[in-house]
Image 1: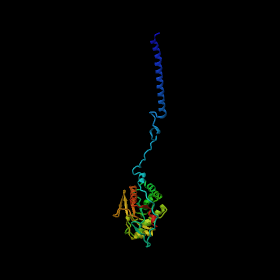
Image 2: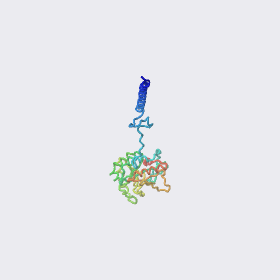
Image 3: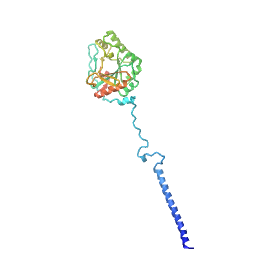
Image 4: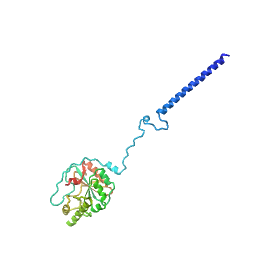
Length: 287
């Protein structure tokens, strides 16, 4: 046999062996690489893990702002205040008439929120706003409105409000007889006491109109003081009665049970806060 065929025979197995060895090496490498992807990395269809992405697998949802003019929005908008100072009692006159005050004669850093009438509108969120924002309010109610909507006003009372006297019929008292004025004031006080279990001790005449007969009749009906006001609040705007346009210590802010009462309460709180004062309960400072 010649050498050439022999060399060809020897070369073929060598080539075959090399091909097989090369194929095994390639298969081994591919199998190892696939194993590492499966063990250490997510498959293309799987969500990235925290270790792979460097971020939590469930992202934190952002804080959702309260809906505009929702109860939560009003509470979030209300400023915070330091505690009201311990009340220093205001001396009351002893001449047989109740004093008539536009503002409480005090220099303590407090102001007072008052709400009148009760028959026109009673926004449903007001009791919750008063409770959650800790708003001290005095309600000067007409007794017929208090009778018809007792449960509503009890909710405000339970939140910290106090019911006071604003006559029976909401007629101007100025120039009326003593008997008429006494009937309006005492009759309302009697009815409010029967509804709320506590006799009113403060009085606001309708429209703020009064005369010396008014303060005499108020005193005889058990009223400690007759109040006017120093600022009014309507549809979210504070209207000042003085050129300084700032709430002063002892000021009394007037608003009404109307559709925009939530806005009025918030506006009053912001005005009191800007003045560096704290809202307080009027009854605590008239003893």
